[in-house]
Structure formats: C-alpha cells, structure tokens
Length: 143
Image (cartoon, rainbow, N blue to C red; front, side, top):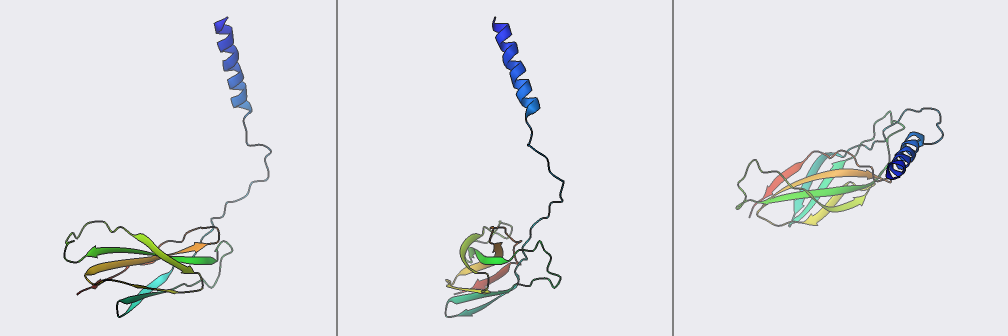
C-alpha cells in the first residue's frame, strides 16, 4: 500500500515537472541592453574647506536608442587619515555621500584637513540603471 502511494506521488510530481513551461510562446526577439553614459573629467575647486567637485556628462552624437536619460548623479567618497594610514596597497572603501539631479554637474560640501580624499561619480536612470563609475579624483588636504 505504501509503495503504491509513493509511486503515485512520484508519478504526479513527474507529470507536473513535464508540464511546467513558460506559457504561450511569442516571436523571438533580441535582447537590447539598456545603458547610461558615464560621467567623465572629474575636477575640483577648494575654497575655505568647501570642496566643489565638477564633472562632464557627454551623450554620444549618434545617441543610440538603448541609451537612457540620466535622472541623477550619485557621489561617492573614500578618505584616509594622512598620519595614521600609511598602507599603500589597502583597498579604498567608497561610500555614497550625496546625489544631485541629472541636469547638475557639480556637488559641494565641507571637508576636514588631514585626510587624503577619493571621489567618483555614477549616473542613474529613471529605472535605477547604473552607469560605470567615472574616473577617480584623489587629493590630500593637509593641515
């Protein structure tokens, strides 16, 4: 009796597995990766402990159809204490510090002396598709 029940359950599971599918099939289509351009040419200006990071955002002339519009830029920062951190091969740990709308190409904030700072920017689309990171901007702000 138990063998019949086990056989029956296994048969049902096999039938369910064989009939599982993704539903009605349509015409095949090529997947198109949606992309967003990356920010470039990071630069900075420092006045009275206020750092302003600026960047460029260029859209290719042949604007491909799969290129998405930039909704916002996200700014990432890493910093190392100049006196305490002498490690040359330690990884740089970036953290997001802010964002600006996609039509603004700069970000300002206050920084402290005694650190080596690293910055990079990422563009985001309306669908939160992320660009590659920009180049990394680095500088020391000594006491």
